[in-house]
Image (cartoon, rainbow, N blue to C red):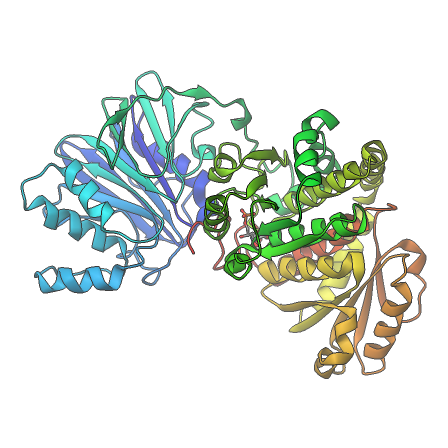
Length: 590
Ligand code: AGP
């Protein structure tokens, strides 16, 4: 949800900012803008759409800021693109977040004579600063004063041409500094500058950063006192952003799962012990997440209940409020998040922390806010996941939950064997024959509009995650259901040619899945089976995609064909695969 970048140093700022924004583009790709100071004046380039691979305009400067936008208030236009210039052209400002009291602030400012040129909430911040500057305070003071009037999770960055400096304030949306001798980087994510420096300074909510002459100062905005914080070297920042020979990050990331399920579960029993002990002493386990991370939580709860016999309940982070009367400090919460910056999840965790609930998190981004809010955290170790649709991080989170559940019943070593066995079978699973099969089936689905996925037991949440994955990239209407729900309403939607995918594993539910498939087939559905090889010849299926061999990790093996259908269907439709429309990788607004 928007990416912010700032740079002061001895390199050419526009180039560094452009590279940084390209690396932040996963956060939003509606429009972009770069502002620099040239001969004491602010110069800005802005455009809608993706950031070009080469900056057309020749700009030279050693200081500047940039922004890549995911629109909230106001359409996708050049006027609405950030950074936004103030009336006397002294400063420009870019924002990540939503000003929740925007309408009221705008009305007040209009009454005071301010005329708005854009539809974005950011302009309210610019005008508030201008208003506060009238009382002869410094720009820094005015920024602090204005920022305190904003409601919501906001982070802003400001370029001041008068004093040749950058100011930024954080509240909620992420912000991190990168530091080298004589140069400072500022970004929403260290991925933006990790090719230049791995020395980082974490910025907390309620802190202001002032950067000039390649030096930084941090201030607490309440006390206005300076906070001394030295950079620390973050080796984990060696992030791989190469496509590795694949046409898209998505396919690369799908194939990487043969390794990432092991990386996510590389923890020793000693490392897991504090969490295991805590769970053993807890009444209930709650998982929290949004989107794919919530489905990972669902699947982990399934394992905790069915393997470890624990009372485990999965919560959507944005629905936490309805559980607040029953969760207390005798419970434990496990939050799942790829980015560790999802606003809905962070807000839920902040509330639960206030109730004294012990928080464990499983995250993929080093140094993220969620890791800092947690009592204990585990890295998914999946490496950078660039495609907006999450694939390898989902299976990493589920693998971690499986290892945890088995460890709770003293079957850590058996779990490790099972994970290695799945990883080995995935090595040969990803091959040209499989890709061709999925591609052929996907091309047959290309002209259909509505699709249903049925799952039961260990495959119920896989049906839901499979549907989300395909929706995100193909823009087709996919719904994942519990197979048991079919007769209670869903079957009314089946007509001649409606594609129905049944997930079938050799378990107590296979007979029910076959019956459900016959029921939709009898009503004209086009039936596709995904699951264990032995069902390949099952007559109820018109097509079948076999999954990788595994005994206990069928949830993971069975989600992979859905990821591949998502990829090949989107490809057949000519959609943007790694950056699907309307989405962003990190949802830092509510
Ligand atoms: C995944 O494919 C989605 N893009 C989305 O649902 C995502 O999982 C969700 O927004 C949560 O993100 P997080 O894991 O970074 O918290």
